[in-house]
Length: 291
Image 1: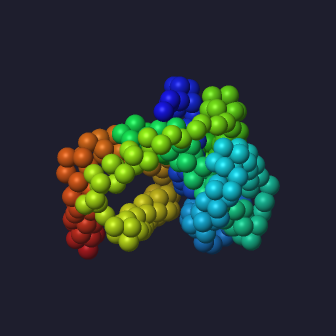
Image 2: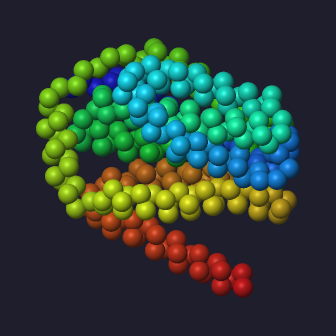
């Protein structure tokens, strides 16, 4: 199977970064942005509702991709991502804003699923696994960039971070220019997929993946939501909050970079255990210090 050129590869990774941008972009300036949008309480929903929308609309996104194809759905998704994300600036009050954020999450599900399908279409075997690892790095790197920019822009004016959603239109233009519309799969892919399944026969079950993913996402959103509010109460400005959150995401970029080697050497289960144990230990240590 022929793979994408460098520009096409880069385009898919850029699109992948929109996954984390949908919620975390507003995190550094969460308090001031919520005030600007007329959200007096439950401001954390500005970050969490897009994720809920992605969960709710994910099955529909999969069905639409099966029916119409990943490429046209990605085009529509990128256009709506920029439009719906940016137009939140024109809305005021919890009802309209929360509906907007929920809908943006559903659009993100389409973008995320379509992008992943295109990666699976263009790559196979070890190349596909490596590309998926790069996709994870791109998502975290997007967190670094968008958190930093979101903090800087929010410190200037609360509405400026919302304009960053329009970058999806730039990625849409890149998609049309650098990623061909059609790519045929060959029979060799099925063979390679079976080999990958055999090599991962000792991996987590689907139920185990759901449980671990839920725990990991709970930890992620707890820190993403509570840190900006806590730091704002400690008189940190939006730019400083964005820099701190961006640094955390930068650590995640390096972690995602060596994750394929770590899982290959230690197995997925052992890597998860190593990741969760120090986190729990650190949490109890902080609790003892506070109390």
